[in-house]
Image 1 (cartoon, helix red, strand yellow):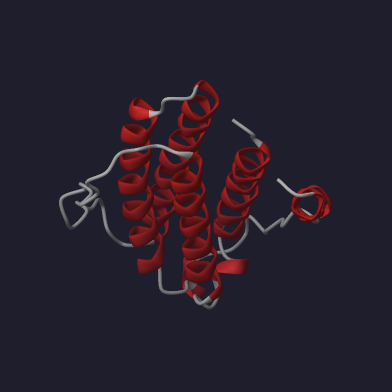
Image 2 (cartoon, one colour):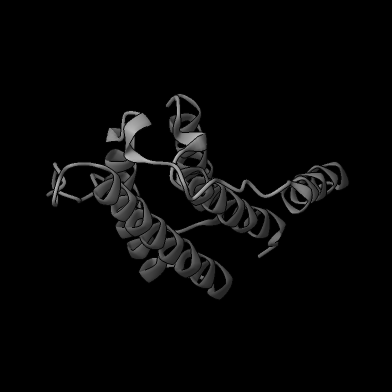
Length: 166
């Protein structure tokens, strides 16, 4: 890895470390709720990604990548659960069954560093885009904190993976 790339990674981690935490009011009520379907969709997507990363984890040939994938799928499952619980607490639904088969059409389960990085960066980008494009989430019921926590933790895993030379 070139020195320039390491400098960029260090700056990225510094950005994460110095970002002011997003603190939201616990007083936000259901009356001004944004479209909550994004929470349901994100929860379902993250559960699917967690399953995908679990299979990558089983097929990792390198212990560092194996452990990193374990952290990643735990994070995705936890965030999926938190988003689903917020969705249920803020909506009028008593429960939901996700659409789709929760499977992956993935055929190649090689858990190499480049594939893992590509998937994590894609997932992080998609989550950030979904959050940014949904008006009202930033100020409602702790939802922004869930997205910010996911962003920070997956960002750290991406950083670790990029720094790994094995």
